[in-house]
Image (cartoon, rainbow, N blue to C red; front, side):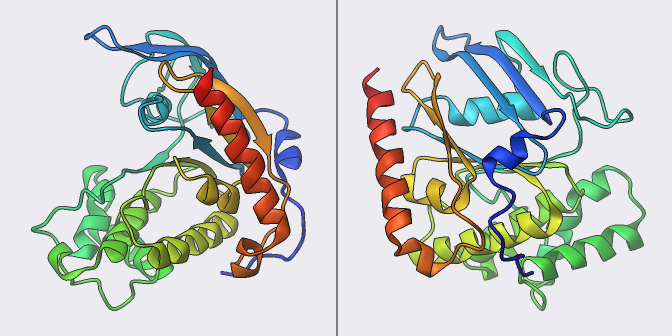
Length: 276
């Protein structure tokens, strides 16, 4: 899974696509308790783009992700899919939602099932024939670096390996968009860096659209073409930062002056957003 060593596929290039994959307009979410989690959030995400939602805990990042996935409905505003396939399943207001992969903060694996069966689960629920489901699950496990661990149970896997199984399960349906809700937050730094690199390789290889939730400035700068900065509750989009640093990104990028500058800009923007 190698990158093409060019500076293309920048945020500006992604935005030149004819239509966004998903478009949020003035989305708000108020819970039954009266808590206003999100207020008037608007966002376009282009096909093939890697964007991060950056903000403090409790600013509505996860809620916004769930609204996009259709796991919860907005209290106001619209979620549209201008570039969705005509035969996609019905989705949010104003369009049709394409296949979506969702990676939660915790791996949420079935403890009684081995890695292969966990990855097969979405295909099993969709009644995909078992031989095809098993073949695709094996392919995904190999893709995330878990070949040879197909029969391992969650209790036999490290935290990073469990998250790899979770990512494989999200990819096995061949989604157009991958939504990731702080998937690496609980991992040690070395494992987190390794999974960041593997995620970028997967994104590049499959031309996925990725929306990645994080409260880490460093992670958002390393991964993303775009960093959407959200203010504290009620969550609002306060800034949209382009990151034109070329890919591939590696340890040399992490120690570069460019990376340090981009992190400083993102950090200062986040501080301003929190104070508003």
